[in-house]
Image 1 (cartoon, rainbow, N blue to C red):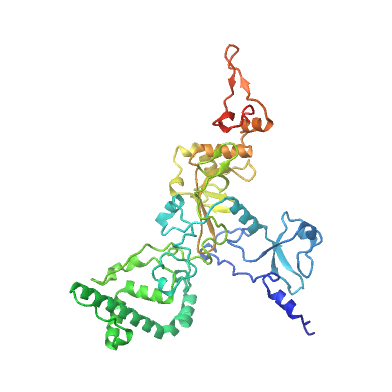
Image 2 (cartoon, helix red, strand yellow):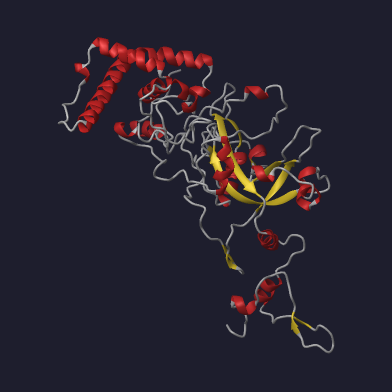
Length: 468
């Protein structure tokens, strides 16, 4: 049966982004080292691969999701949130293959409620804690570079995140051999021409420096055509012995993602040849990101903003967040560091707070991190201060948390949620319009205001009804 023809306008709408579903992106690659370990079948993937689709409640009751066939009410109406992802529009059984998309969508909303900016990854493992204390936004002008001139690629290679070539350390042997055959071997002539241009610039700079030292006029510029074949062969032999120079030439010609290998070739450096050592790239340890370093999760540029409390006013520190102890520390099960869950992500604590001393083991926080709590619904809950968040090269979100720097922040958070029978009497009195509660100390003493755990009074916050 021939396909029904459509008008040019209908064909244009079908192919437009407004009426078409984009193709799914490749799924994240698995870790082969974890093949023999137990993995949860219901665990959420590191990042979404399909578009999330929603519909109004009125259309949802009719199964109308904007497709050519309605979705079954028995499945879609049982979901708390009307969010689905379409895995296949028309399967072999002529049905629409879909599933709930609440996992990634709600996780995105939870992360955005944290008001946490995305930071640049650490340049090395030793700088992991320093990034949490002094985060640097991925939207800074020296690192957020998406378009550049060809002459700028070399000067900003240690700060930018976008490269034309792959990250060699993350490639398998098969992918590396295919990349050599298809992308590298065919550009041998171009690479020799690039080396000739580089050698001509080096000779020009050397002649100019020598002329300045001898107080002579600067000689004319040396061009690549002026270099003889014997001179070029000697230059090739020279850079083959200096592995650091050769690696830089290959990396800049193919625009490869950075690798932290400069220190390995220091012993092969040629004497008398100057070298420029810049800071290592933040993407040299684990590779560049597969998308923008922010991954579209947060567009905040700095965490240095002030939160305003309805009663206490501007706060010095950001509010602490309630976290769940997913897996307590236990030497019997091989868990040396407890797993902390924050807003659907497994957070990481700083190194100096991972070691529980003898005193902290018997504190309420230490007991929650060492013992499995079965009496509470969902396990033990603790409050943590959010430090920074990064997106690694595989697309996973890594959140760094630490113990609250001030115990008052935890009290304020519990007070807002009404936990542990902590009630804001000042707030309740002000909302009800009542007068300050007076409790006599003894029959002979003068009445005074009752003390609470709150710092301040109605007068200090301007809540006294007599002064309004």
